[in-house]
Length: 262
Image (cartoon, rainbow, N blue to C red):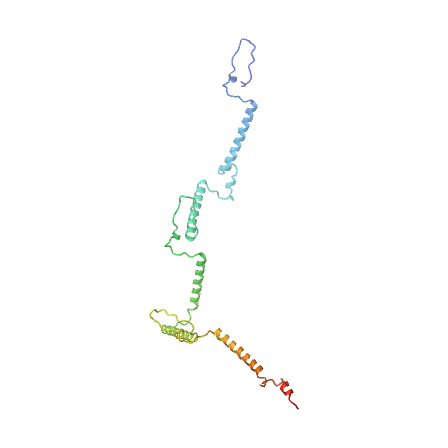
């Protein structure tokens, strides 16, 4: 039972090699080490059982917490894998839908070997409107639809009335143009027909030089100043000419009358 206990020999002629102490023998543990080893194994077994109960709650022991009536339904491993597969498929479909609805979003790739020509940036592609332009166009269409609904009950003119109204507007535009040409002869005539040509009456060599409106006002001011200066000079050169007053309150004695004898 205890081979580790040494054999006591009293016969000096007896000798032998100890089997348990040979160099190639397995190292033997003591009784204390054996007990400690057994205790460690027991603890490891208990921990293994606790881990197994936690990972596999479907194993029955007492009252199962996960099988009580108020417990949340727990899916199996296969159901969890299938649910993850559905989620990945839904995320991929969402990504495709987003890329289709918003083509202006650039494609992000991490593969340096991937390359391609953008369908929306090729030279022959139609111009794509931005989100702001699309919203503005939608607003304009909504306003047009509202105006259309409001004008449903209005009286609609006939084709004859429409033509007559167009003719009246054309005649008014022509009269307006003729009036503008008459009032402002300095405006040049624009001609788009290359065969038509005529000599301008106001631009001929023998025509009197015409002055502009600002020059006319300046000339009138200069003439008024010259006239006033002429009157002042006449009054200075001819003092015998009496002064004509229109104000009844003005009075005075001339120097010529003071020198006359009484």
